Amino acid sequence: MIIKRRIITVVLTACVLLGLCAAAARGLSLDQEEGAKEADNSIFGHRETLYLWYTDEALTDYLNSVAVSYNEYQSEARVIPVYTSGSEYLEEINQASLHSEEIPDLYIVSNDSLEKAYLAGLASEIRLPEGVLSASQFFPEAALHAVTYHDKQIGYPLYFETSSFLYNKTYLEDWARAQIEAEMDMEQAQAAEAALAENGAEAAETEAATAEDMPLPDESEVAARVEDALPKTIDDILAFADVYDAPEQVEAIFKWDVSDIFYNYFFVGNYIDVGGSAGDENDSIDIYNEDAIRCMRVYQNLNQFFSIDTQESSYADILQDFIDGRIVYTVVTTDALAKIEEARENGAFQYEYGTSLIPDVNDELISRSLSVTQCVVVNGYSVHKETANDFAVFLSCYHADNLYDRTGKMPARSGIGFANENAKAFVGEYEKSIPNPKMIGTSNYWVEMEIAFARIWKGGDANTELKALSEKIMTQVKGEPYTEELIDLPEETEPDTEEEMEEFQEEE
Image 1 (tube, rainbow, N blue to C red):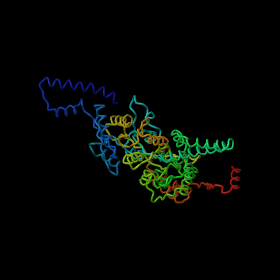
Image 2: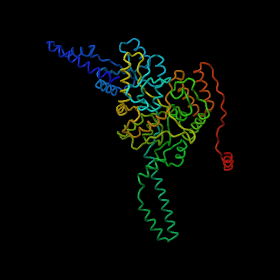
Image 3: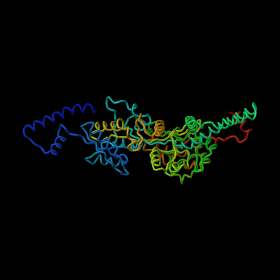
Image 4: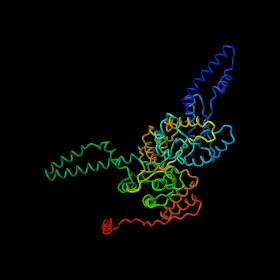
């Protein structure tokens, strides 16, 4: 442990200093550089060198800064961050572990690679040092599930990616003011009519003159109205679209990237299970079920209201449309905040905006987003596992406060404040999210699910598509042909006439 070793180091350092003083007394003189090298490499003053590998260049300055802080914090080890851009990241780590003198002692990797890393011996079970709070005090449950493999914690959550709901706050505030003013006008008109009926024309004129001096809507009332108007379900978005008198530049009330599973998955995330809570159980797969079918039917029906071409759908273009004021609502990942703020600084974004949890599918079906967690892993081949574990704790638990400010990455650690209040919605969404599964046997699940979403959006039968997807994934996992029993779930139809509505209500 760091604390115990620091006490030993103090004693040993004192011994070294006494030895140097004695040498000086005997008239020995050493060149400064050679003396520093000898002290550093002596049996008493040796410093372990930890190599930390990572693949995202945006982390370079931050990791170098943390490494310097750690080197100053203790005197037993130094950390050298190593950036690598190789496409076969784990294979490169494996080769370096087997054949290099500079073995990567720890590395940052996506949680969906943890099973592969563990089975290859590249990830070891880790434990918080004695005296350190439990992991649940540092991280939300979703983060801990992300780094758990067969009940073993084999990484420390560092930062995450998930989706959230983004809205043009200026448009909603303008709408709220117009609503409040219309209500005030209605109240005054009704008061004038009452005055006319009771006291004649003169009283009505007095009431009308009073109306002209009515104050503007209170901003706190506007804010409350906006808060109430934020959609809780997809149905709320549709209802708002029916009554909203959009400004001329608005081209869509709600638009998102329907071609990317990351922005779509919230529709079925709560009802599809791939690997259990930690995404590591081959016998816990449930893709084809009634709720998932219902969710995908709702998704398909949205194409009638928000016609979006999957071939032309692009997240970058949609985010730019939002910045340009052409969209009221959309679904974004954490990168959107930095891009919007940059656009605000250069004058390209001239609105206020806000974020919130993604609306539920409807009053009965709950939404749940997908998340990916980047974690710090201690290499099973490292000969400095204990020290590497100490640094991983230092990095993920105690030095994550400025991670977002320095890199734009959302820290997985709980309880961190943000200068941009809109970051909080992503934290809330992450806490209830579905971690990306880590099973090797389902590695193509996302590609297949994305294909199923595209087919359903274009009119494919949700029941048929989910059944086929489940059979393909289950066949891969079980290693033999698998057939799902057909779920007989008729399409739900809305009553068209008053008569049908009455019959429908009686049946209910």
